[in-house]
Length: 145
Image 1 (cartoon, rainbow, N blue to C red):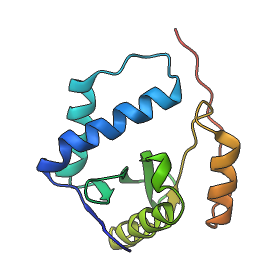
Image 2: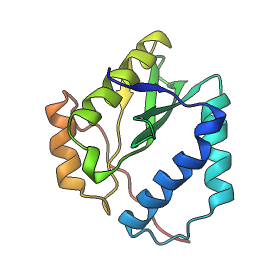
Image 3: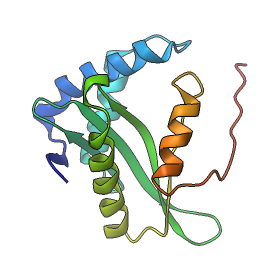
Image 4: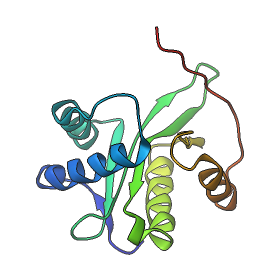
């Protein structure tokens, strides 16, 4: 798993740079709120049911996830955010995914859920996830109110 590791507090500034790049690439309809993203990252680093994985030195990719018990009785891990700098994509994805899957297994998860933002190359992410052994399981819709 090359240089994938769990993030530590000193990684937070670099992770925030990665998340700012993620936000810029996504064309999201919400502003980048550094304080909120920092809180999210720190919670993932410190949480008992969450993980923040980084790859590279300096970090060129980040994967944030958590695990929970489903209402039907199995534990699952869910990726909440993944970003890899364009120049480091490819094998870096495989390394991050392997580390995430190992973390999920150690947490006694039976399933893993990955998401793909429609604004961020959804067809490419779908192909990548399928090649990694994942199949579609749900579709989520959103409406601003």
